[in-house]
Length: 404
Image (cartoon, rainbow, N blue to C red; front, side, top):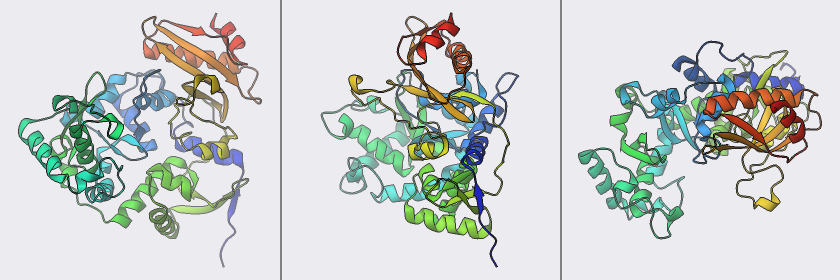
């Protein structure tokens, strides 16, 4: 006889999800250390990378959301420092991501598929076939001469082609996708410098056995389930961009083993799964600005299911058609997304510009005051001197009062 499936309220599901992502704990009182950063990444499983730098680069923001003021150099050392102290590596996971080096074997199935020209962008696929000798020659050159960026070869940009990349840049990206090379470091322009993976990754990781594909998929789904707390199959597979079939089989195995517990969430049309180790806090007392690609909000349909909050990034929307702004961060207060702000770092003037501020209809009376506190903390973290609030959005006037 099977037991009845538990039903979770939307509020309970939201709190479980926030706790899984580290928002059920207070920020450190003492100075943030490498251990704190490793702890956040152990929870999230990855940090998404994005080149947009209007506020600060994407991968720095989830750590700020959870830890507050911290030295960005700590993340840079973990990701792009000396190989002996390297704890993170770059690869395609959710999107371009920083991941713990120990996870590299779990993604070798994706590297093997890329080597066959599967699952990669069309613009780089020829290097898995007729143009492979060009890529092999480039790999041999890196092996003999050392780390290289595309601009060290024939320039990062070419005429037309894939994103306007040069042939060398395109070949490098295919080699990166196959796992033969990885990012040795990043230049000030954020350009990748590539090197052989075995010269960057720890020897123990390079020598680690390669799990078979079903095992790797189960492991990735397990990491996603821990990071999400409660999730649908679509949520789980989206975390590391797994296929529906790979996810279906993996989820079934995790349910059979008892790691995932089928549950219903009120208002969710799809079956949900609770990780057996998920915390179930009665309260969440978070206060944080969330990056557009923070794992809490990066899957927009899940954001709507969890928070009743419709969120779209409008970077590619023409300015006159934008509803909330160019680079908009949701504001998490307690267990709800209560406001959103369009932020820009004006580094020349040392100003954090609030280009628009909007409150949700259910925002509490003290939303402007609490948001002002968080913006002051962000200003200090970014090394800026002051905040300027532009008169745009229904929250702007109240926010400006608390900034004066």
